[in-house]
Image 1: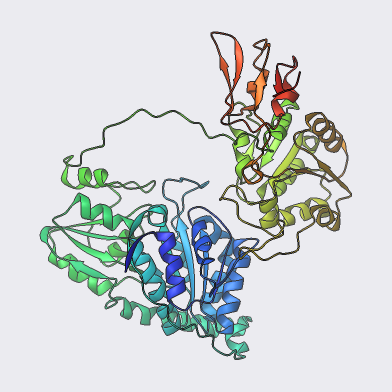
Image 2 (image 1 turned 180 degrees about the horizontal axis):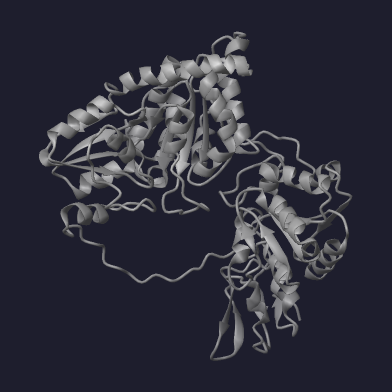
Length: 576
């Protein structure tokens, strides 16, 4: 039976079909839906971990214990997980271990672009790249076979287009789940320097064996047509090449570390002009040039962003044979916090107080957009608190005009250590934890503070007040982010305190509570436009009649605009 599936759906199906028992992840677009689909298969234990490093270590532990395991994350998550990843490349595992790296060319939902094929080469582990959903599922099984045959973790690298595009997938019955009995082997799994030096040699031997294997593995193959033009490609780029250059000969690579040097040389000898077409870094191109083969690659194609069928056609043929779809008008919607978002009032207040805001990764990053424009930095998850401490150490007076802002899930991901650093190193930084009771930006995933696991089981909730106090913070205050007057006074008090402090702004995400308050109404508006400074998409302004307007379909009735209107023009339905 065949069915349409996204790449993420197909990977989850592969987990079910190929005997995987344990799955762990931290949510991050474009990888999030993999775990959300795995949880539909009760045969597989799956969990959200506090961060990617923890998820990687859970997968490693499961595989060493004898269970097939998979760990998923977006590409920047591999930065967090790199420490255990590089070491498990030495130790190997008893059962199969696969890491899914979901890269994001074009930065659709990421703070940077990175090509994690380079991580696989750096860590000296095999790398698989599917080009459609069927291959995404099948390569989960192949990755497990390679992992167990060569005693190595395997990276399966997808991109946003693979993760979220649909293609037909053939479904099969699942294989039996077998968990091997645990065997103690400290010389293999305890990475003392003496053990590590011995394992280092094994890594090199393994890569040589894998190089031989890559010459004959079925996912590396030639499609010979017109020998005038030959293309070496992998992943989603293969689909673009097939459409843009239907007559070209293609060497399609599915196992891209290590590369099949013999197959590449054989293919190069069969074509007149050889192109390497790949997104982001010249990963394939550099390796092929090291074989002494002259290729055309990044002199034509950019090392950033996504490729397109049209771009490939134009660059290779010099002609534009791909018609563009007729453009159509669509309403412009700038990125903005949702109506009723509890974060909005906090950023409105930050701007009023003219604070320096050291920001973080989450929905609240939109606090940098107009009209709020109340965020100064956003580097990576958890960097808000430690970055604020660095600012304070550079300019001590900044502590009195600065806050570090971080979400609840992000604080648990990598903010706890930053706050610990503030206390330990005598900082005065005020940290604001925006607790909306969920991991909102990636689609409402549970986390250790929500009281529920990915599999729907009840779980203890992290007590942020107790946690902050345990780290040594004496001043911890909870506020309602819709109570702007109190929020303003608390912030002014805490940033003036000559010691670390934490403000916990606690309100559930507007999208999970489904507020039933009636939308607000406008009466006798003076046209001051003060309410528009909140940046709420439910509010607009009628320039002709000089009055604010409330979109009844969007308004959640949160009442934040009532707090900022000085003329009582905004009120709840039925209020006098």
